[in-house]
Length: 165
Image (cartoon, rainbow, N blue to C red; front, side):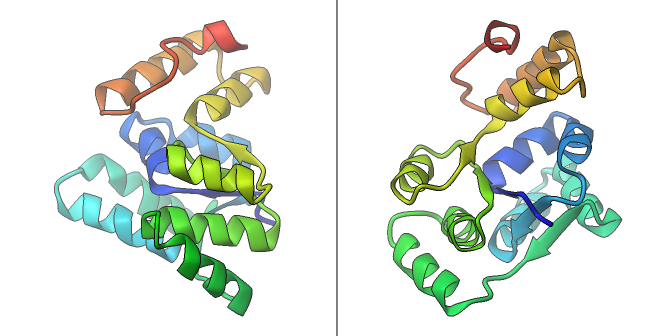
């Protein structure tokens, strides 16, 4: 059963840094992206970000699932949220809220909406901390991933995971 919904930013951070195996080890069988996030990823690949190709490969491998909005409740919540958020964030929030999943997002507005809607929340840094705490990787490896994410454009609130485990 899925346990976490990734928005484009978080799953892209892990793909761009070569750290998708971290997500697979932590969330195998429990990770999803919405069809709107899927479309954003495909646009990124078409724009030349070839390292994002690991995301469709992860969907084909089956450990990352893709889903659409299913219930009228999800669609209604998505419709309201999409007025102030991107489609990927709005769809991820709607799925997380209606299905009781955790949301993985670094977007400030999406995180505020998640808090308002009482959705369990994590982000890139939280996932790297979880990876260290669960033994998926050590702090040195987590910091290498974080540095690669920052080099790829992630605006990290921290410079080292070691300070937060």
